[in-house]
Image (cartoon, rainbow, N blue to C red; front, side, top):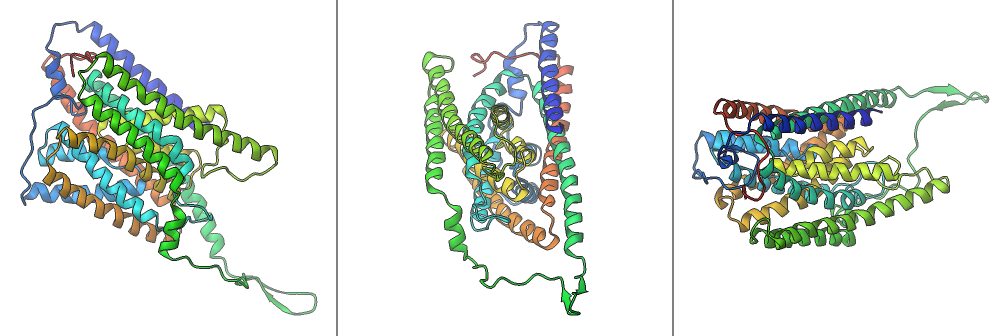
Length: 460
């Protein structure tokens, strides 16, 4: 019920926001230079004047290092990346233009995600003899997420700046609130469980007067401890990795070719459309597999879940996952993030435990963010020294963030910490992006700038 209410909140909020653009556009028909608005938007990736500060030791670099480290550490632990924090930091503190800031943000997300994935591959699943990364869910969401990123980049050219700001505030406040509420529920459950585990051992006397102690005995055959290499090999699933890599290569090739084609030509739209059957094919295959396996287990009375998610894989739930995957990618394309702001909370919503949700979300983000990094590199959208430096900071932050939080979870026996970190990062992103967006939108209103939808072809 809570999930349906959350979806209704998003759909109604988005619908009102988009419809309001039509009303504003109708009442604001002045003939304005639309390209000036395009230059103002920090979210779109169209032409802006490059501003690349030199990489030198000063207070700006120190601030960027600290914020980048903390943002990457918390972002990868929560499975959301941190793009909503990086873009404002790079524009306001370091001084990059918005297009370059979005590109460097992708580099940081890719670095943090890659180091986080490397750490997670050497960690066993907390409750089952299965990989810590749920490859079924990765195959389900990765193609939709990458497709959504392409759509988001296109919409960033069309949507007015203020509309993107409103959509971000609606989405981020909704997902952070929902995640925080879920974290409180998990905290209460963990409190009850920890109290049960810390109860003193009970002793009683049987019918023969013998003193019995209620305790757990060690098994006769002790559980074999696996080495880091054994855990690494167990967590790797080469066939599924090959499928994910193939999808990544196909999307990358299409993007690289499309960037050299004149926008809105026949070839441009053919290349743009090719991404849809690729994503649909992979998603459809995995969705059909989950549906058939779930149906088979239900018919035999097997209550074990098909994958890490505890939901029933009905056509309605599968369609919901597809919609959320595209929405997450679209937000990633608009913001210059990896799409984890939707994927992280969604995995928790469908019943994935926090450790697996975090590992799977960062694994999927590694593919989606690296796709954009390759594209931005070929287009020379970011300065290599700054990108390499901040990516190095993010790599260290991703690894050590996972290390310390996992240790803390083991000590406190509270996996809900991951959910609270996720909620906090999303809320912080809502504040930073929202405040900056509102301030710039007010400035645009004072300057009587165009506030309606922009023309896609003329804005390229």
